[in-house]
Amino acid sequence: GRLHADFIQAGTTTGRFSSNNPNLQNIPIKSELGRAIRGGFVAEKGWKLCSFDYSQMELRLAAIFSQDPNLIEIFRKGDDVHTAVASRVFKVSMTEVTKEMRRHAKVINFGILYGMGVNSLKKNLGGTQKEAAEFYDNYFDEFKNFKNYLEDTKEFARKHGYTETLFGRRRY
Figure 1 (cartoon, rainbow, N blue to C red):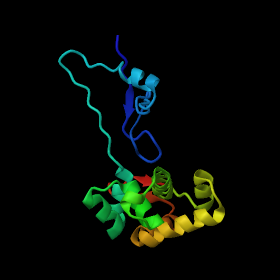
Figure 2 (figure 1 turned 60 degrees about the vertical axis):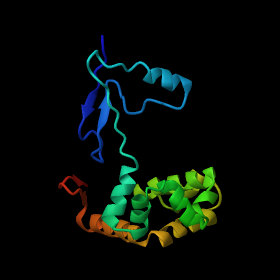
Figure 3 (figure 1 turned 90 degrees about the vertical axis):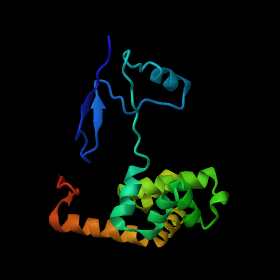
Figure 4 (figure 1 turned 135 degrees about the horizontal axis):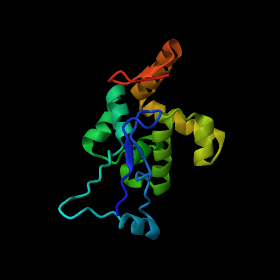
């Protein structure tokens, strides 16, 4: 009388966990229906369900690998990374960051990690090519070590045909 999903340890091309039959990793939470669906998850008597969310894990790892002092400072201070990035890129105080500025920073934070360029940034944020290029440039002016890390990683991949994790997993 219970669903038991399959969890695949390296179920994606990037090596992340995945689940199927059913996929339990993308259950909505913001809508009434999503909350109702989540309410259907009940532990057996004497057991507990645990939920894990690695908060901005990719960005934390980017800070560590790139040793970018500005990114590291954001995490050390415990600031909201998207608000802090918006503050730096838009050159305003943290208290002046609007929801729209934070949303733009979130798009670029994750987009750049996965190879988003100016054209994709323009498409995702709206606005003009010039605005997207300015936002992109401002981002990398603030996070120079991160930019260098990304460029070095791309150069390694061009030269060797793959990237490699700390544990030796290769992605060709």
